[in-house]
Length: 116
Figure (tube, rainbow, N blue to C red):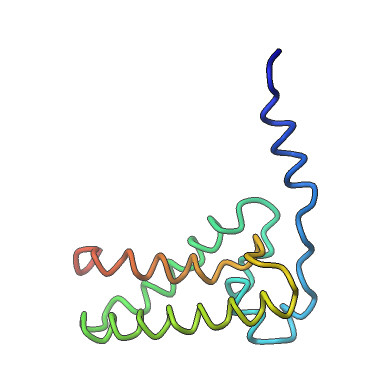
């Protein structure tokens, strides 16, 4: 009696919530959905991380202290945005909300050697 894990995976994804239309009209939603990266039909979190790379490259020249200050502020902003949008759409941790991928990438890159 084999269990088909792919069938269970498909069944779980069948109930994925829709992307709110406000993503293109409300800047808070736009930020929450990873500046548009969260609309990717497959692996929106991975796409969000890829979208974070150019932002990191713009921040890379900052001195470490300023970069860390930015990261702390961004994590706070991302937490607030995620909470607000989750309450508005009445869905906790929507798969398309990937501002947390940006925050996680920025935190991770604090340990990268300068110039990496």
